Image (cartoon, rainbow, N blue to C red; front, side, top):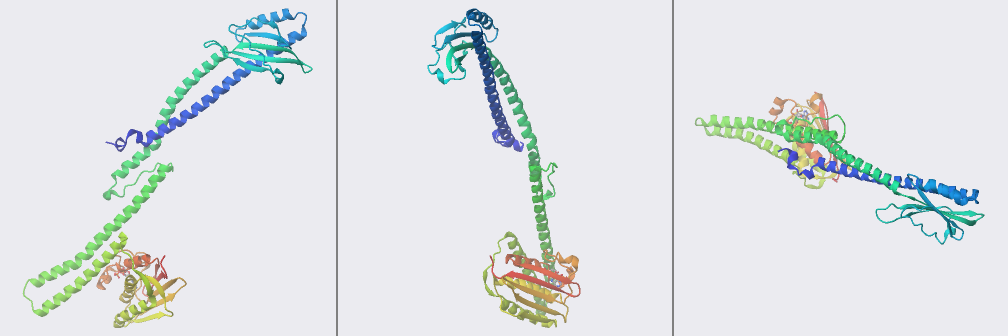
Length: 474
Ligand code: ADP
């Protein structure tokens, strides 16, 4: 079953998008059509009103021009006007006392309404719609008050059917309805295709991400090249995949390296024990063999402890026990302990702390950090060399510099020395008991203390490690 099949139809994004599109489209069409209908009706009515006003003016002209033959003229006019195919008219004339003095042939169903008692208010012709029985056409009536020198002289009432207009509107509405259905059908189909097309890349993203497992982490999502939101989503997923792949590779390398480092001493331990047990030995021989094995076990214990520290650091489980420390005192203690070893190698080891330096930190972790750095300096400095340990207090930080005149680190290796299991010279490092985890642990301890560690080195001249730690942790 496809992934889409599992999602309920109405919950699918493409269905919801198509629905939203259709609803918005329909609302817009209804509003536009409503507006058109309203404007169309208004304009038609205005046209009829204008025509009726013109007719009233014509009648007034007839009255004014030929007062003697008035009746004949009006009858003539009536004949023409009432026989029109569209908008035939009927009219009546009232004098200033609102007495009927001429009425044309009436239109079926028309009864002129009474003239308003407050007609003095009306300077312009007044238009009204007269509704009649249901099924019959309503009438549009125009009442014109003709005044001379401000005095009311005649009132002309004229009427016509609204039926032709109603028919035109009905016709127009039928067209609108057809257009509405066509727009609805094409709009919905268009909306559906549009949403399907725009969401198709999501199907591809889903399919590809489903295929990705630990064994094919190198697979990437194909970009459309449109640089739109979906392309950016694919790019972000690709970047995430890259980071995952990197972490996974690191993890695999770490596990393989750890297994490799454990295997050699374990094999030696096993081999030597087997050889030793193959025949009877003297007690001195037993003692020597056990001492050798103890040395290997010490190495293994240190290695396992280092691995444990790093894996806890990765998991974020390793926490610091922060306390107020006399930092210069702590470093002095380390100096005194390591000076004994340095002296054995005839290395001149100096310590300088001009002032007392106090910081907040984890005593055990900081001891481990500087023990590693001093131990390395002694390990990689030939007999007769120099090592300096300096502590400088800063405004809100402490700076420790460990400078040696040892073998140095080649520039190409300098970027990698903090990587796990990285050793510049594997054979020499192994001889000195190192597996390349020391500096990784140092880097983690410095980071955990929100500090920085920096290294500068020149081969055959010496190496300088600079550690900066904040005086108080935030
Ligand atoms: P190791 O336990 O092998 O010493 P580290 O992580 O402590 O591992 O150091 C990584 C590598 O960095 C070492 O193998 C060594 O080659 C190099 N290195 C570290 N400190 C120094 C130093 N003070 N002088 C020269 N090389 C150093």
